[in-house]
Image 1 (cartoon, rainbow, N blue to C red):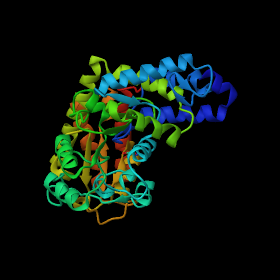
Image 2: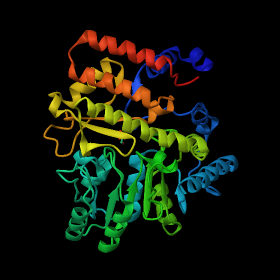
Image 3: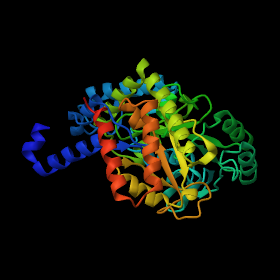
Image 4: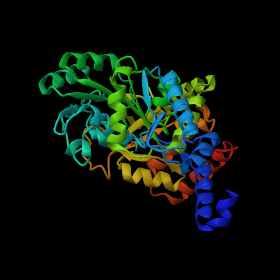
Length: 411
Ligand code: DSN
């Protein structure tokens, strides 16, 4: 970043500090990852200079021959990676992708079903403070109170009662594998459109560590920067029959000029995810999460749904007498970066919460394996059990820094 250093020392210095901070801390935010240098180079490329409203070969501006080639490459790679009939790689973010999907298939005021936010759903799946809850009529389903797992009979019953036009599956804080076939059957029975938001576990699907919804869903939305390890951004996939609806909804429906520098980086990310090493990476994410979950449970932490089958763990802190907010802060002070999260039927408000969400995609990218996960699990427990012990947090911070120094984020 020699040019940036010369031109804008203030931004340069802050970016250096952020790099050092990312290097020295343990990232356990389930939705974060470290993009490769290649992905970052494409993101920072000359394509930031270009307007390209429209789609390849049908643009509203001139001078897009290379832009077209790049977008086509991204589309073809996405289709190959996920076995999709069609891919639109233009959505700027996960929320924009979900807005576009709604725009394509719903009218304002239509009823749809998504998992309740406090049960692991996303803001855009019907939260009352979000467009999805304000402009449409959400009827949420929940996880089973006892097992904290999806109960497909209950979901079916609710769908038959409510008759939603669209049903969303795919969540931000659900540690178990989703039965996409069961959702397809429910959707067929009630005549609903099936939308899978695979943002969190797209990388696991791409790497074969999680079942694919591709042969069941009418629409698949995903971000590209979580387990998929690409640039910040999103895409929508669907069977060929829905291609036109989706494309029209993204542009001109919801967006203007696509971010072609991000699309180039998405193409790089899909290329990386098509390599055999990515399969090993996806499998290791899940292995790591399981070991971390077992270690936490062995030290008396209660896991929501009792276990993990994915990249994320949801911990109920209630038995330890600490809130999610307190745990997040204490861990941050110890160099362990996580996020507080509601647990199903959480009595505490979303800004406080009773839970903590932990994920392994970023640590796995650093090359950490089962041994490190056990060690990290022990560090987390120490801090959660002694959130006000400053000396202990300092000691843990030193240990996390030492551990991090053995696994550089960028070599
Ligand atoms: N913010 C993302 C997450 O952390 O799950 C979802 O949008």
